[in-house]
Image 1 (spheres, rainbow, N blue to C red):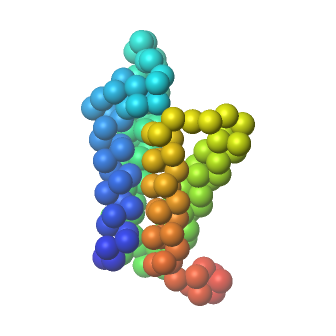
Image 2: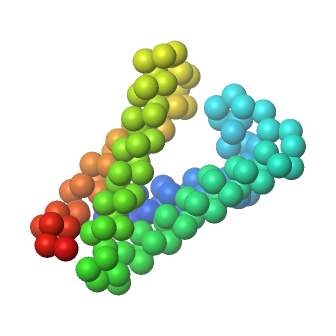
Amino acid sequence: MSIQLVLVALVWAAIGIYGIVAPKKLYALFGVPVETADGRNEIRAVYGGMCLAVAVVMFEAPWLGAAAPGVLLTVMVMLAGMALGRIVSMVIERPGIIPVVFLGTEILGVGLLYSIIDMSALTAA
C-alpha cells in the first residue's frame, strides 16, 4: 500500500470519525451552529458515515484488483469536485481560513491520488 493512499485514506477517516463523534464541533469550524438532532444526524451521515466509507474502500484498494484504479479515480474526482466548489465559492465571497485549509487538503489529495492511479488500467477497460 502506497504512502499516498494511506495519507489520503487517513484524512478521510479522521474527518469521518470527527463527524460522528463531534458533529457540532465540526460545523463550528465553519461558523455554522448546529442546534437540532436532525442537523447533527445529517453531519454524522455525510461527514461521518460517507467519509468513513470512502476511507474503508481506499484501505481496501490494494485488494480490489482491476477495480482499484476506478475506485481511486472516483475518490480523486470527488476531491476535485469539492475543491472546485470551494473555488467557486471563493470567487463569490471571501472565506475564512478553515475552508482554505480544506481546499489545500483536497487539492493535495487529488495530486497524491493522481500520482498512484494506473491510468492505463482505466483505458484498457
